[in-house]
Amino acid sequence: MTVDLDWENLGFGYLKLPERYISYYKNGEWDNGQMTQDATLHISESSPALHYGQQAFEGLKAYRTKAGDIQLFRPDQNAERLQKTADRLLMPQVPTEKFIEACKAVVKANAEYVPPYGTGATLYLRPLLIGVGDSISVKPAEEYIFTVFAMPVGNYFKGGLTPTNFIVAEDFDRAAPYGTGAAKVGGNYAASLLPGDKAHIAGFSDVIYLDPATHTKIEEVGSANFFGISRDNEFVTPLSPSILPSVTKYSLLYLAEERLGLKAVEGDVPIADLDRFTEAGACGTAAVISPIGGIQFKDRLHVFYSETEVGPITRRLYDELVGIQFGDIVAPKGWITKVE
Ligand SMILES: *Cc1c(COP(=O)(O)O)cnc(C)c1O
Image (cartoon, rainbow, N blue to C red):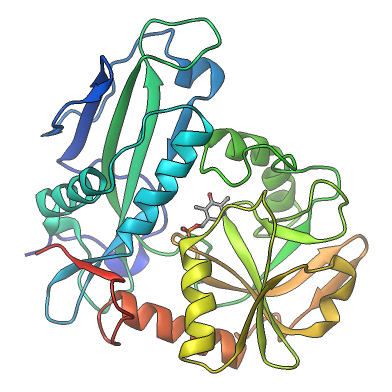
């Protein structure tokens, strides 16, 4: 049923699978889309995606359940977010049904690459929307490609549920106050490569960005959202228009309140007030929940629960979320889409 891979030791890397989905937008409409074995895109050298960053992406996972079924976690949320990103960059929306059907088709066609239950690994799906065609002037493309490809992945941050340390970026922002921080676009990532590289060289797993306007409040990690557990049992995540609205974060806000009995709060997280938290973490589809051991800010390392052990509430949130994703725990209504 599955191919022979070292499932337990997968990292987060590209693997060229047999099949992917591709659809073209021309003359104001999407074609029906099709599966292809061609993993190379053939696009005009003048494509706006290449020159002016008119591109967007998504990330979601397919999970193998104990019974051997395959399921997606909240794909409608990714479809809606891609639509919002498309609006921001004047790209055509991919309808939710087309998005979900494309994801399902790619999972089905590569089903033997969906990792076995119990390995912790998943099939990561990467939907991509790019402006293409012959057009060198600074205006929206007239043609677009929507493609979805996939690869089996393990943990994004090395260590999984082992805490790692993060460092606050003091000289860099990932997004501007009214810029594209809330859109899932490659440009935000291009801007984060240099600070990320500096953080890695200094021994940190990633960067924490502060709000670009005042540099006093935590915004997010370069590729994941931040959360803290306060001393009075609140699950706290930053609220800001320049944060990428994480599906994982909103799922955790719900689960924290409904299943763990915490108070879920979206609000300001002043960097000067980290003492209010007993635990902290980074969350996202790729990161799942990565506990934050400590945050380096200026010359001080603020340690939360422990630099080596995950805190009890973070562990419970992780177990609840991952249990739902792999089908071991009953999901809130509408969160799971069966593939086959
Ligand atoms: C995709 C992404 C996240 C995580 O969002 P999820 O929907 O939970 O996967 C967080 N921050 C940034 C910058 C992202 O691009």
